[in-house]
Image 1 (cartoon, one colour):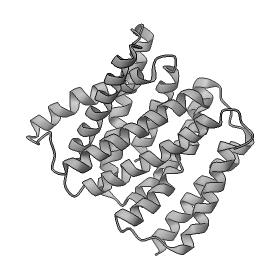
Image 2: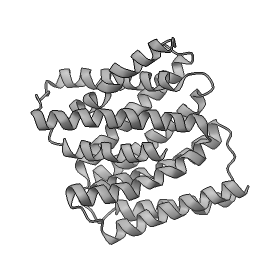
Image 3: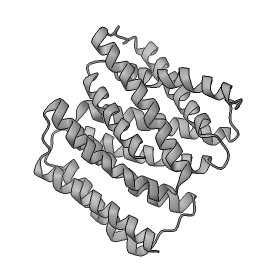
Length: 272
């Protein structure tokens, strides 16, 4: 999961670097390495591309695509740290969804942790104080879609190989982005610098997806999601290095609230 968070943060940097390109073009290129490489591995391992639990594989692919679309939009429209911090409310959605659908136990004593995290999210979103409230709400929506996708991955571990799950997501996301791109007629031929960024973006996406999917197959969703909080730290460092973005005091306090509440929730689950 730490590998997934580092590569996911670098992916976010590449998306922000390519923000002058059409969003659907960025999404398409982010899937190309996976679309090429993963089927070759599946064929070599003699594993069927089509999987077993096809309805859930399609559902995970669609939710992942919505999560990617909203995430990429937020990254192009907001400071890197703000966008990544808001998305770290995703584990709290995961806690609730895992309890409802995976029967991973939830306790009433965990509710204060969720409230604490919600307050942290409000400090980062800053409703009423920021002009760009729409991107912040899209980032929150991205957190919800990604939570659904991650919980679905945890359930799919019982029926399908992790590479099949990744393959479904990449083909669904890539096909949808290609269709929209062709419909909009907005494709821009990238120059050599942009092409290099898009290639890096695709490989970071591949490594991030592989590591994330494998992590959710190996451990409970509520435990794995704890390590997602390291994205806030990586995003802050990369935002400063690449974009000279310095988080404001409300973002720092809000991020601290989210990280602390996530850790307290983790300790509660370990002790119970």
